[in-house]
Image (cartoon, rainbow, N blue to C red):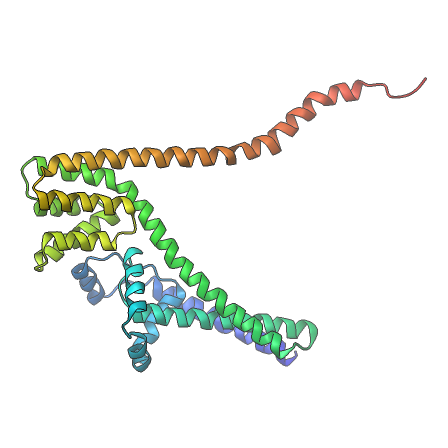
Length: 304
């Protein structure tokens, strides 16, 4: 066995062992401290892949690096806002550490490709090896950033689907005579989903001393859904101007249901084109063949 093949097998074995260890750690039972912290912060559990679990493991041993990664600035504030909209903990340093590990994983992937080229050809250009490693790092960073954007987009879709029911429940609670804080607390504890968790977080902020309007504005800042932002703005305007809250909430619920109906119609219109694909390319050719085959078979094409 050549040295390059041995190195490739060793690298594959190491990656497999790390993947198994990360999977075991990701599916272990949460500690009591983590559950209490989660209940106190009222934030949904973070979706962590193997690299996220690895970042959580090595984070205590990298305190000097973590101090540099937690530097504040305009970029840190934008990243914190993106993490909040994606429903993740606003831990900028941990996210930056994950980006570093993702980049390292991309470099490792480029290294595996270089080893494969070495095993196949017996040699490779060093410049090409550096380019492959750099390309792997760039692809990993772009993938990690797109993953965060995808989480925010999926969360916005879930909140859009939950908004009509939450708005109607709030309207019923307020119409029954409950104050806005009690209505938010009741709906947040009764309903399930991302929007209900945000309502619970808003109630917790108010209980902690934040004003109602400021807490609602914080909910709008954490929400990736424009519909939820408009809903919160309507509640804020009704609170400031003394407009009957129940009427505003009913109007908001009706608007949310109309918007959901429009999204459903748009989705069905887009899916209609996709549904025609099997009909045109699979069913229609078979029907044409079945219709024409008897006539073609019965033709006498020989010249007497």
